[in-house]
Structures are given as C-alpha cells and as structure tokens.
Length: 122
Image 1 (cartoon, rainbow, N blue to C red):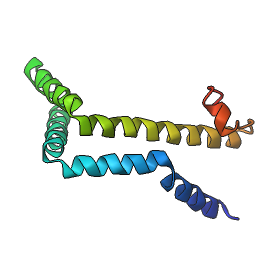
Image 2 (image 1 turned 90 degrees about the horizontal axis):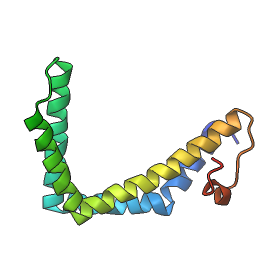
Image 3 (image 1 turned 180 degrees about the vertical axis):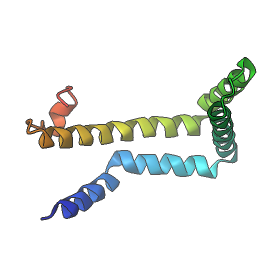
Image 4 (image 1 turned 45 degrees about the vertical axis):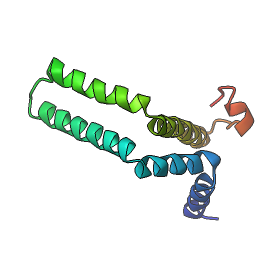
C-alpha cells in the first residue's frame, strides 16, 4: 500500500470517528440557529476588522477590545456555540495525537497504542 493510499485510509477513519461526527453535528446545529450564526459572523467580522487595523499599524483601542470581549461572552452563553467549541477541542485533541504518533514514527521512536496515549505518552 502506498503512502497516499494509507493517507486516504487514515482520512476515511478520521471521518468515521465519533469526534469528527460530533464536530459536524454541532457545526450544523450552529449553522441552523440564527442567533448562534449571527454571533459567530459578528465575531469573525470584528476579528477581521481588528486584524486589518493592526496590519495597517493601528493600535487596538480599549473600546475595541471590550467590544470583542462582549461578543465572546455572548458566544459563551450560547449553548449551541459552547457545544460546538467543545467538540472542536475534542477533535483537535484527536488530530494532535495523530500528528504526534506520525512524528514519532518518522523520528524512529516507538509509537504508543491509543489507550496509553491518554496517559500522556504521546
């Protein structure tokens, strides 16, 4: 089996994982909720605006910082967004572990099994 075939197989396994399925389900729930979607859109627009200002050498004001923190607080109070963020964290943990195992294999180190990864060997 070629490297690319193994990569495709790994990708297919990741898509079948409970973490990925949960991530997609919570993402769809956010997209379907008008309030949650509006909050995320507002947050992303404000982030982009502040990024552009910084790239143009402008300082971010205290008022702008408070505004984005206010949006973040509203997002944390939204159950659908909170669930989505939690599922993102869980999926990111899986991907981080996968990357660590691949890195160890490339470096010739012994990879641990999935059960012991939870114990911190990865």
